[in-house]
Length: 97
Image (tube, rainbow, N blue to C red; front, top):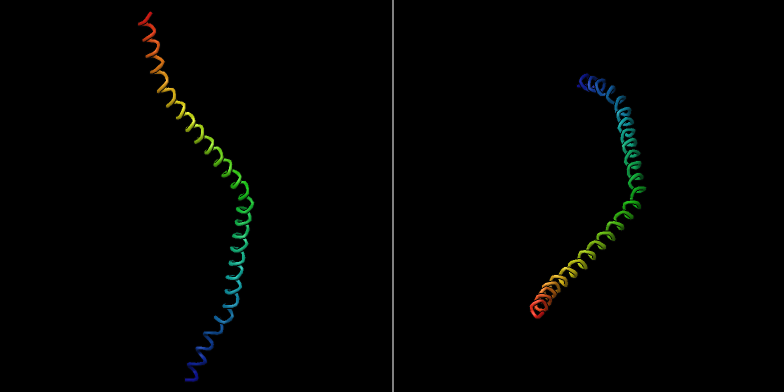
């Protein structure tokens, strides 16, 4: 029993020496990953104001085009009712003369 325990201890000693190094490596990898993510977030935060400005401009342009479309639609409706009456008026006038 004691020999078996000593053998197990001898087998575990190298693992015990390796574990701190593995832990340090893992921590370093996590720090590198964190640094990369923070750098990526920083780039995105710098782009955000421009994106917001572009969105606002696009929204304003979209609203302008909607207004133009509404106004054009109203003008088409007015013209669609005006020109047939104008044609009838001239036809009657032509018949009378």
